[in-house]
Image (cartoon, rainbow, N blue to C red; front, side, top):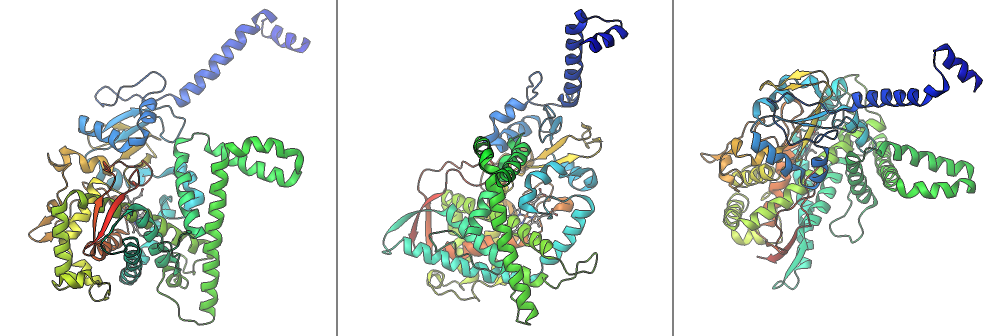
Length: 549
Ligand code: HEM
């Protein structure tokens, strides 16, 4: 105490001044914290939702989280230009979130000033265990490297193998639906979204790893499929949880402590176990997936060294491919990340698109009739009976025939305009910048663009924007491809989706095999609700009445 008095005396103060000193310190620290987290309020000419002191629009984002795409749409449509949403700089969004609305702003961020807008370390961290060191989360030179390697995958061979694999899996789905609708006069109520998620995990595991997970017919899903779904769901939740890093670290430490110190620590750990349950499940799920991938990689390497003939799957194709940068063959971890990123990219996106397609076709029976007619004409030579038969010839569903399904292609595009599998995307500004419409973007801000909001915006697609009208993508009997900056479902610019042709092929092939054989109608009066996640699954599930034709 005496030394404190001495210090105070040296500063010309006494003990009576202590409360004032403490108050001043608290004020200084608070000011410093506030300065670092305070929301950025743009000038008056940039519109935005109503703000509250301190929190900006955080309360609105939180309140509308479950319908975020529609929340963005309402303001995109209201303002018709980029708008700003100030938020405290404590989470993932920087101190202000800007929504891009027009084609020219999208092009500016995704192409013209591409190097200035990156995914950023927050996204990399939140999805890191799941995506590994892969194309989805990488930026800069690392992304360039991944993009070049990934581009090699999307060859004609991949498309042909994709056709063979999908044909096999849709056959199994037909078999399953046949069983569910026995005897043939009955109809059955089936969750078709669940069916499509099962089918697509099998399709992409087969294309990527060359293994069969058998999810469609079996009652108990494969452990890899369970882990894949669980880790994906839980990782997404980190975006809403500002303390997820803390929970992850705590979880790791508490597990280690328990192992090291035994019973004494167990009681404390019990308290943390509940709090860190999701993080523990992510860890466990990632281990299951990694072990599975490694087992397959090692067995493929053994086959290769025994000069056995290798399959058409990506893993086998990549085993010996030289890396375009260093001329080396990829190591186990690199191989694992390449194929896992491929699966993550393709599986849920395609399953969501197929679910929404059945939903829209059930709501628009006249469109469904035209699709079935086209399929019968192009794939089955106009023979309606052949289109319903349970023998499937490869020639009917060849890569070329599927490519000739123009109207069906337009239907899939229209579904993806209204129900884009990735409804909202986000980037972070490295340096301060100005959008083409003059909006100033401070360094570190987040810029968001929503394919969902853009796809339904009347200022972009006209007054019938919300109407399901596949004809908007057909011109003179051919597909009329919209500008990628207007139709952003597959992203745009340098990070344009590499899998679009494969995705469209899988969707059309599934429709070609299912629609002539079964009638699907909505069973539970589904109103088109969705679950707001990184992808856009239907919510609740998609219960459909399935009847044999
Ligand atoms: C309907 C189906 C699909 C949709 C709507 C879709 C949409 C997208 C979107 C929006 C992105 C950009 C993500 C971002 O950077 O934030 C993307 C990237 C990507 N997609 Fe797709 N995708 C689909 C299917 C597929 C399939 C089947 C594959 C292949 C298996 C695939 C491979 C990729 C890859 C590799 C990227 C990363 C591109 C890069 O960052 O350079 N996608 N996709």
